[in-house]
Length: 169
Image: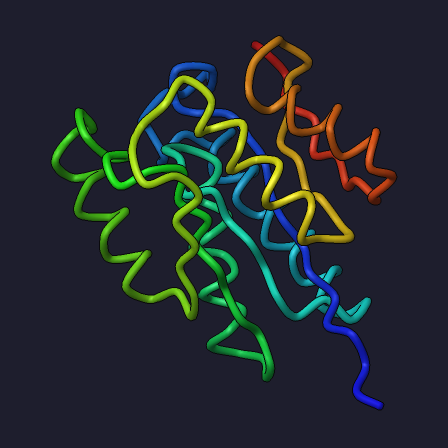
């Protein structure tokens, strides 16, 4: 009998909630990216091989890039882009749209959660990821929003959470 694959998903804030916004060269952003990479590597060491990413601006894209880097170094890693709707990147800055599309192209799997934008497609994407994982890595500052929603849903579902707290300074 084949062992069940262990999956890990991620939630985190978009640039508008991050103190550095889009300035990824900020030391706080670089430190968070290191913490994300360390958490992913720790998950890998615990047996996690499949990683689901919601592909939102900010922390989600940091996570996706870190998993893709891990996949280059270690065997068996797969990355799934959980896309809430086809227009997710509509209205994003052009450089972020290009980044998003490059990252989706590098993923092993794409799951489109909703055929069109709806007021609930982002939450459906978050539930899909949690429902298909046994570990959630979260970069969270405690404020209301999608990241809190995803963490609360994961807690109700009883999956493990690795919290990478963000300070709002």
